[in-house]
Image (spheres, rainbow, N blue to C red):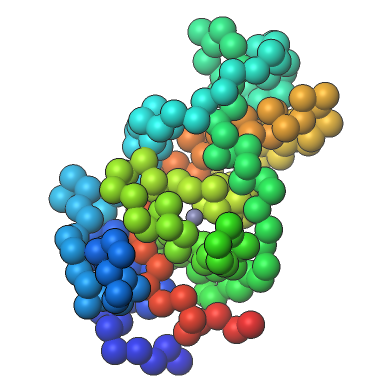
Length: 227
Ligand SMILES: [Zn+2]
């Protein structure tokens, strides 16, 4: 049902990032594979979004804003044991905070793959996860063009992780109720924005990370998507 020539991986939509070639900036053929510049190689293998690497991503990139929210408030809302006992202030990571305002235009499930079309600043983007192939990826410029591995979690991916929280929970052996109850507490909290952003931060580092998904590339945005 998928008909295109360059399908050399089982999943025609998402491929591991070590198969990715980026186009030369400002090239006329920038969107085409003709303008191959260099392969993106992360440690010689696909970049795995495990707890260690996700922690590294949060550390490498700035984007942390401190808030005046009491740490006791954070501890009371989050699932037990996820907040460090050494915490002195409550911060928010701006890309997570802004991910909640991203709009999903359409969503399509194909087998164990979920594709979401989201509205972006300049155009619409495709964000997808393939639970069978253990791949995650986005077509936005931040994810596809920046050279650092820190790009592997963009706002659209945070939106996808949030929307698919139940799927992520059921695919791990983590206590589902505690995380969902925690989210309800965050929603009701007077600092709801800060609490929900922190919930998604802890959810990504503690739950999503356990699936050890690989950073993938969206290779064909049009074929599988029925509009
Ligand atoms: Zn993105």
